[in-house]
Image (cartoon, one colour):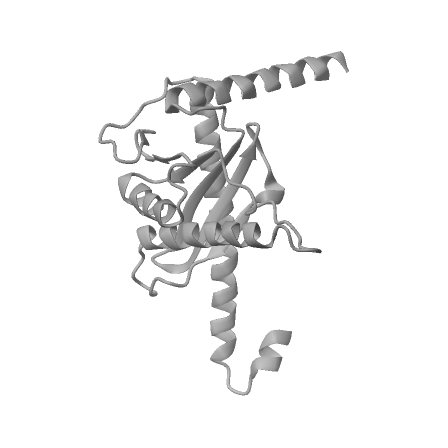
Length: 220
């Protein structure tokens, strides 16, 4: 029990340190206790899925994860920028709906969408970040919700309306947390994409069999 308690205290210290480092490096007014990260997964534009993962106090909050089936892009013409814009538009549309129904008797709160994040991390560079900034401006939230883009190759952090990126110190707790959040968004998105692609593949194969109608296809 003493060893477990010591490990828990060490982990808690690392989480607090990582959040404090991000607050300082990104110029935030407070530690980002709720961080949301978004990624887009597809295979040459097929079965596109957007992933949203949430970290609270530096720890994954898997109950708040959500996936978005993206249908706005045509098959064979992948557009990660448009997919990211659609996903964030739907996310903040749900936030606005939650604010409108919050005072209604019997209304249920979806904690995934009812609260604003302290920081948004976009898996991508300037292009994806620009689309998300557009969504936040249209929703009237650009001044309320900080957002950055994380480029894959050099782990560069991009800021809205700023040309030069930021490189967090290697082996710092803040760097480790950002990488972990990005990797978790990628893992969750890939898993959801594979499930959707598999479902679409099975459906298309059954559609090609003569005599198999909607009822039988659903049963199979």
